Each structure stands twice: as structure tokens, then as C-alpha cells.
Length: 317
Image (tube, rainbow, N blue to C red; front, side):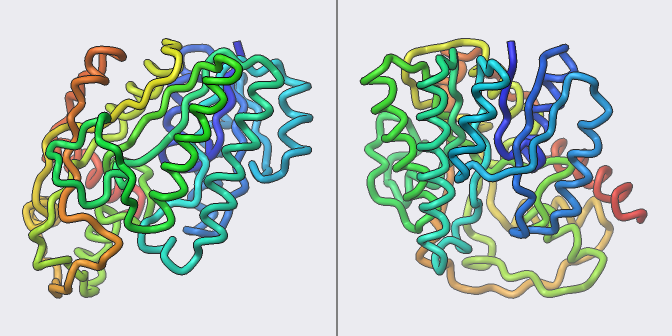
């Protein structure tokens, strides 16, 4: 079998690719190494994967349909983990066209080439952001999720719906995974864990929405990867499945844990929560437990300690 990982040099993608390589699978990684954050970080992830013989790296863009058609024709791809995307809720507010082009058109290209080439299982990465400011807590897959707050979740929800079309028309196996605030070693520098850890060293001021009184359901990378691999291994027709820890904590508590590990106080400034951001993310993961055997094991405190230890080594502190 051959696994295609889109966005495979990114944070989640590189961890998924490495887990597949470690169990002996043949893995193709496609990534365009864009500059949403420092491409050198993604280059480093790709270099780490390059230690495995069963890896093939393709530098390219999922919007390039001709490239995808050649790739699928040449490589006998059996499984797709579609993790490539333009990420970031707030960044999407002023870049609607780009986010829809990458996240929806790119997904359409992959679904179309997967259909043509008989892919056995297609896993589509989505986001807890599709729930918006829902009053249904914890977030559950039966929620209509039809009130996105920004272009990023709107593009992801649109891709979910498009994927169902392919299941309906050609019986494609598609599992949509709604990720919840994934963090861990080799994470993205634009996300809160890395920004806070940087701030313990630089002294820069960090803006906290609503004085830190917002809640997020942080999910450690190894738990997320386990869920992705389970979804790749188990075709289920068409399913939308939450993939999160199920234990949200306040941003203020999250900050205090990092301050404790760093032994330093972070300079903080309270600002209003922007309209693009919900007050809470909170995962009902019972469906993932039932269908995928998902069982997250890493607490936020433990996960942040592992992330802090990686950050210290990465930065040479």
C-alpha cells in the first residue's frame, strides 16, 4: 500500500508521515513549503523524514491538478491523508480568496484524482472551528456547524460537504477528522504554545483574549496522530468524527503552566476576543472512541512539559 500525505512537511503531517514510515509503510509527502510560517521549519521536518527509505518527497501544490494526476497515475496511491491547508482563523479574515482556493479547490482536486484512481480510504483534516459559537457543549458531530466565524472554518466545512458528494456518487470512503487545538514538539510557531514559550525568553507582550478567560481543548500531537492512523486503517463509508482530548482549560491556566515550566512570568495584555474566535472549544470524542478506538492519554500539563523540553532543545536554551 502507498500512503499520500498532503502537507506532509507541516506540523501534523510530518508526525503522521513519520508514524507511517516507522511501521514500514511506503509514504509519499507533498508540500509546497509556503511562507505562512518560516519554511525552514518545514524543511527541517522534511529532513527528519528523509532518514527513512520508504519516503518520497514531492515539492508541489495541491492546486496543481496536472501534478496530482501524474502523481496518482505513477504511484498507485491506496490511502490519502489530506492535511494540507492554509491554516489560521484570524489570518483567513483578510485572505478569503486564498483560503477558499487552497482549502476547497485543493481538496476538490484531491477528491477527484482519488476517485479516478480508486483510492481505498480518504482522510480529510477539518477543524473544531467549524462549530463556531455553538451553544451545544461539548461539541458533537450532530451539530449543524453551519455558522462559521471566518473563512478558514468556512472553507473546511465546505470541503467536508464536498467530500460527502464523492461518497454519495461513487461510494468513496471518506473520514473527516475535526481536529481540536493540536500542539506538541515541532509545532507551528504561529500557535499559542510556541508564542508563549518564545515570550518567556524574549519578554514580548502576549495579547490574551478576554484576560485569558477563553477555553481551548488542547490535544497532544501523539494522540492526534493515533487517531489519524486509526482513520486511515478503517474505512467507514462517510463519517465526520471529532478528534480531541475532551478536557478544555482556560487560556490563563494554560499560560500559568508554561510560566511554571519556564520559571518566568510572561508579559500579558488583555484584549477583546475578536469576532472570528469562539469563547470555547470542547470535544465530545465518544464517536472517535467508538469507531476508531481513540483513547487520548496525554494531559495538557504533561503535553506542555514535553513541548517545553523540545522547545528548550530546539532553541538551545
